Length: 267
Image 1 (tube, one colour):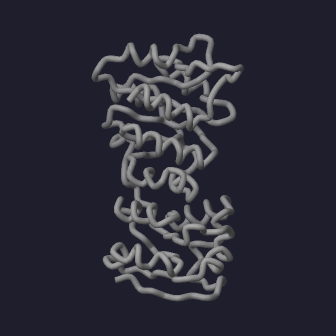
Image 2 (spheres, helix red, strand yellow):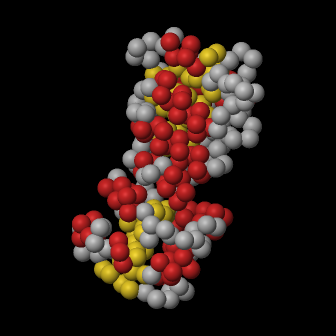
């Protein structure tokens, strides 16, 4: 069974994994160096452990011990039991769910694993962790088989991404692409028809693109960065540039919202 350790000092070195969770630069350095990520909330923690990510420690308020007892029973890791005030002092924000876990990153899927499916979302250089998490949740909820992210895309295992995804990013197959990847060759070589969601004069309506697909055709949807959209290289890898018709003078949707619509229409 996990070992319960009650702490009352925010400077205790055993809490180092949880320091400054709102400081993205600090977290990227710590989590990359030590191969860790943070799960927040009992539901997400449970999904992370059940998905096969080995826990390193837990940081829990007293009220969560009973609800997670069955999960903790089979683990040999420390559980730091603290007040919610102490958790806020350590992490730098109000941990309103009172439950955190530090887990080891494991490379669960390769690019080839993801491309073994038939519906894949491919993200280029998104910077907002919230959008990455939301897209993962959309993909999982709409029955897509996986997600690929570019070399410089925001981290799907960053705490905010995991939280917004409701833990689905922990079970959805995803992998990071090599910086030098020839995207067109990769996707076409795996038998995919590639749709780039972008604003373009030659773009086709999403519904029209969906109607022209064969019943067994594989589809990859390319989603670009929040500011500039897809790069010329990624647009060049697409078989078609696809758009969602807009009204009221609005030219486009948030990338996560667009992924939900495309995911539903093309599922």
